[in-house]
Length: 393
Ligand code: SOE
Image (cartoon, rainbow, N blue to C red; front, side, top):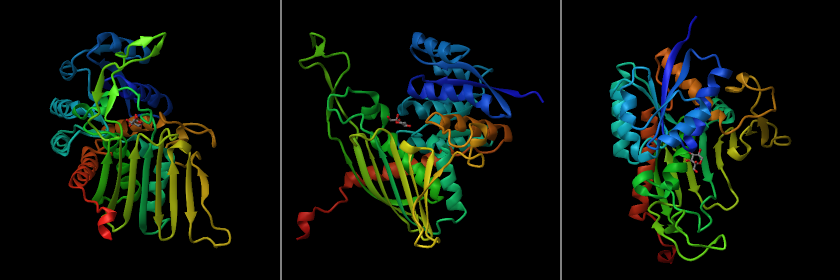
């Protein structure tokens, strides 16, 4: 049977552009997709940079204005890999133009924007136009296995969720300014960039939703050097160059109550010196526990409380067996997958949903649910919902 083409245009081409480009190219090579992705165009304001990405990853053409992409009949899907301040405008226009949309996380920079995007997605769905938000960590085989085990009741009733996302790329006070540190571009800092991932993962693995939070936000370093503006003396930077204000959080910590009554503790920081991409989740239930750490991403730890206490203990499941999610398309047991495979699995599930005319997950509604948690944390932190210990003499 001849496969129908799925013309793809990617808006944006930096780190996420590279991860998405490899996924569009790799997915049809390892999975039998019901449609054939065609890398029609990469779009970015800098034509030279877009041309370099097109040459490197095999995009057939370049565009420098995303609005032109929406006019093209050879493009069926728009893949948004830009900073959060552009997600709503591009996604809503693309959906209205009848293009399927894959939008990087977080869905938006504010709850209000996310609500508009979810409404546009609902309206487009009625026209057979599909949309997905890019929480790729749920497509790590060990995480998808965790979801399966919770759903099967393997750990019983969930009582605790403990989620952390620990990075340290800003621990150096002289690390330069970037768009991720500018509220007008990123919407928030660690909270939206990496906190969004652990909120989605916690809700995905437990099948539960966060209903209330109490949180803190902190900005440890309030201004940073603007790259390329430092006077250099003998090759080393010296003297004061231009500095820009950091207008987002460096770290967040918050507690959460789930709809089921389970309690959660969440932490996301870019100052956890020594931790590079430690996205960790532990779920404690009445019959057992699950634990995951992305820095050991092919492993899921399981504690089975129904085992005899004399031999019970957390065991390491190497989630690379053929019957583990997604693995059958890849390598023999024990060979392992990497960060990029979550993006490839995202393409597989999105293309399959489009071909089957079903709703991809996580949907824009799922993205809005995460955004609402992020917004509640910001409101809680702004209200200062903490008690000074000294007052409780
Ligand atoms: C932050 O540095 C970041 O790149 C996030 O933006 C990504 O979503 C995450 O996958 C890796 O870390």
